[in-house]
Length: 607
Image 1 (cartoon, one colour):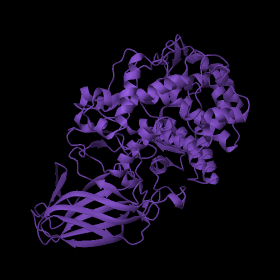
Image 2 (cartoon, helix red, strand yellow):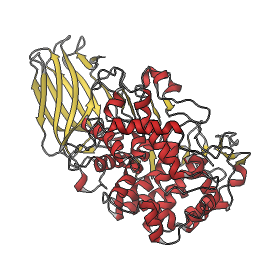
Image 3 (cartoon, helix red, strand yellow):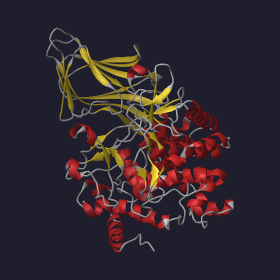
Image 4 (cartoon, one colour):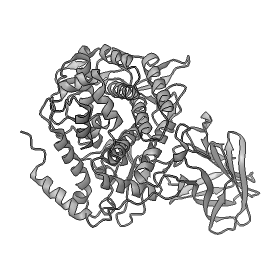
């Protein structure tokens, strides 16, 4: 019999519990107003902190250093400035509604309104004019001029009621060559009607994910900064369907909105996205003729197809929609061609060659591919390494499948999932307390190691930007970032994924992120690090709004809220009610978990 909780885990958990008892366990309420950071002028930062574009106006000379930006008027000019996008590439002309900054589907109860603009000036040429403009395309919707004093100025201006704005311009006027302004920070102040930390984190995460969706194409862009139709993500598109149903259960959007989003996504994937042997690509783009095609150099993916199809199936079931078409799609995948010795192939390359890499290791990805295979074929897929640990200890792999369906008590291979998940959660909770007890992460109680971009991408080589951060797995040592970056990292989406199992510790992480301004309705954190553990207020972080990790943190926070509010998670319920999916679940799970009565599995889920 497997021993999931080894003796050293006892000491890890005991140490963690004793340490954490000295930290205030009471969650801080989210503030009633929040600053949405537009830019803090980190030297390596090439986009705004809202993950949009920025640039110079009229050839002004810009120099970033030590968290400040010096803008100097060049020879031959008497004015110049900067512009800052607020939402996606500016040329797409997709503005933010300053009177309701989240996507319009999110109900007014949860909407924030932008009420102030804040500009921190460190120094300037005395007497020059700093012009501030809020624009929708080329139309100025609001502007104001400020006389510069030459010294430090903290400019705060109350804004009138505004609607669509897609960029901010900051212009040094009535100037001479060599005149300058040194900026420290630019932000927008917004109201925050949601005082509960977990609810605010869920609403904002879902809002950023939904904002990455194109309702015309039905697809989700891979990153906020990607133009829609150039690099769209299939797994995140399906994930949005599942997250939307959770948002409906939480009362964030209406049922009508949920049905529209889910139907649009399913229609696009089933009727417009190309297939190869039944598989969708990992990433797609729009061709010149308007068709959807695979992104060159990427693969036709069994895992991304399985994730997207599973999420659509469960979302449709939850809404009472017809699941016939998505079930037929899953059945018609050429599963036989994907079966390799020891696992299911990752799919095909762009030239239709089958990939030798396969889903052969314990974890959520293999489970999701496996349940799709079992539901379609009524067989068990080969898995060469079906027992813990995961391949690399990357946190999301432990919990991925259980964001949308309940884990079995014991699966076909004898894995006791509840015991394993307790161990996996405790390993994450205690990691920094044990390995870096003097780190800012240990001092502040911040947690989470999972796959993400590094906190400061320009300091590494391009192939190193995306890292499988994790606690270590089958023959793979821990990757906490220290060897690559000189200091460890935290990836917030993992704390969201385990929030239903570790609510105090997870919410503490999100308290800190919100109260320090890193997470807002328009700001996200992909990963973060502290270069100096004696200065825990000086954080370096990646503000990427990547759709897949937004999906993971949204589903994790939603699961936590459902359980906290004593609700049966809507995706769990739907997964147990769909006969097609249950056929596969019963094959992979011992029948102790195949509870027939609603009251029975309702108790199991809530417990």
